[in-house]
Each structure stands twice: as C-alpha cells, then as structure tokens.
Length: 140
Image 1 (tube, one colour):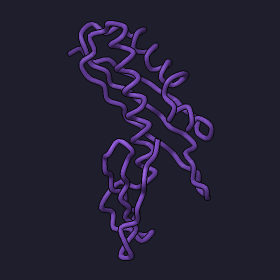
Image 2 (cartoon, helix red, strand yellow):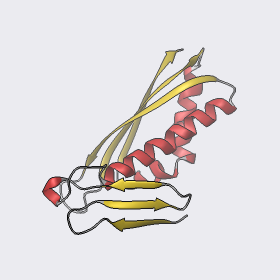
Image 3 (cartoon, helix red, strand yellow):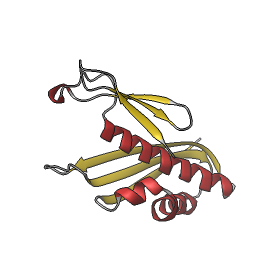
C-alpha cells in the first residue's frame, strides 16, 4: 500500500493526498495551526478510516451470516492526550445497524470480531487508546 501526500503551498497548511488506488483527498489544519479549516484534519482522517474499516467488517460479517442487514452507521467519539504526541487515549464506537429481524447476538458477534480480529485500524489504535463499543438495532 502506498499513498502520496503533498503540501498545497505556502499560504496555509492544506495537503493533497493521493491513494495507491487512485483517489484524492484533501486535508487541512486548524486556523490556530496555520490552516484554513477547509478540509478534515489528518487525525480526523485516522478516525474516519477506522470507522470505515470496522463498519465494513460488521456489514460483511452480517452478510456472510445471512443476516438481512440494510444499514450500518458507526459513530466514533475519541479523546486525545493533552501533550505531544497527542495520541488517541479513548475511543468509543457506537454502531446503529438496521435490517430485518437482526439477531442481537449476531450483531454483537460481528462487532466483537471486527475489534478483536479483523479491523487493522482499531486494533492498531488499541495500542494507545482504551477502546469501547456499543450497538443498537433498528428494524428496517
């Protein structure tokens, strides 16, 4: 896997990132750090990627278990250290999973498997952060 990150120039702290799969993403900093708040912060992107990684796992595990899953949202709330390096210290994942007759045990299993075995991002972040999770099921 390879990405390329390029600074957009001397008038701020925005960066253009190109993924190995050919997609472009812009990142920017907070005004107090010289940015213009025009795009997500790099650490927000870390959290976004982690949410995408684990939601992907949950949906895939439920589909493979022949559950009638129709929607999945992961909301992540994180705390960071006060001093540098400002690593994540706590992250709570809340999943809202919708579908027809979803079994709570199946959703709980999918969430646990993602966090314990499959989601590389959340497993990596667990090295510095206390990870917790919860879920709710919505009939769709």
